[in-house]
Amino acid sequence: MITAEDITGLFKDQLESIENQELRQKVVDAWVLGCREGGWESTEELMNMPFTLLVETDGINFIEHTVAVTEGAAALARAQQDNYSHLPYAIDYDRLYAGGLLHDVGKLLEIESDGRGGYRKSLAGMHLRHPISGTVLAAECGIPEDILNIITCHSKEGEGRPQEIETIFVHQADFATFNPLKMKSARLLISEIPEV
Ligand SMILES: [Fe+2]
Image 1 (cartoon, rainbow, N blue to C red):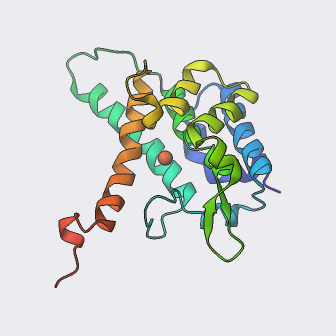
Image 2: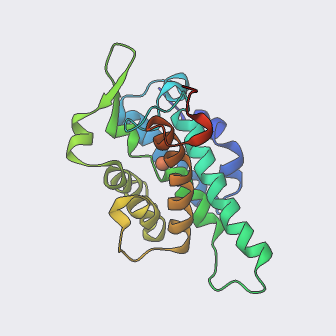
Image 3: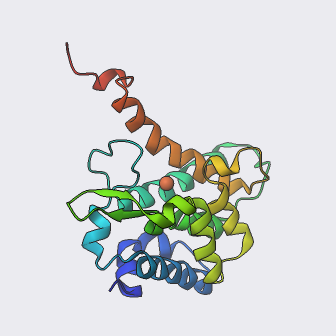
């Protein structure tokens, strides 16, 4: 069973960046609930889980992805904050870190082991894509709507929809991790094309 302490250990730095203690706890609660509902038993299982089934992930796991996207979104926010003469919008770092950590929490329900060392889309995942199941999970744990917007709208579900500024940063950071692997798989990432 994956505990709150396990989740805190996986995301220590990012959780500590959330100043609101109550929100920090709710983020941990949502991860623990997702692990329980998805049947994930240990942190080792989470570290072996690919972050997507859509491309070859080259061994990049779900936890690494979640941390990279969260830190990438924070870096995008800081790059603007530190270099613009004035910031045209307010950035809420609690919202950003909580939303980054939770953006893919629905994948705990969407992806399952195939029992042969591989992974497949679960029945739950066929019914609801992870932005939707993740939103439901997080709402059950009391995550507020502005952060649910990040989970719901971080992927194609958000196209053309009203979004928080932090949703945009998480979306861009997410695709900055996904697109290079997708292009590498399609032999479109020039430096990674094997010599012929
Ligand atoms: Fe993601």
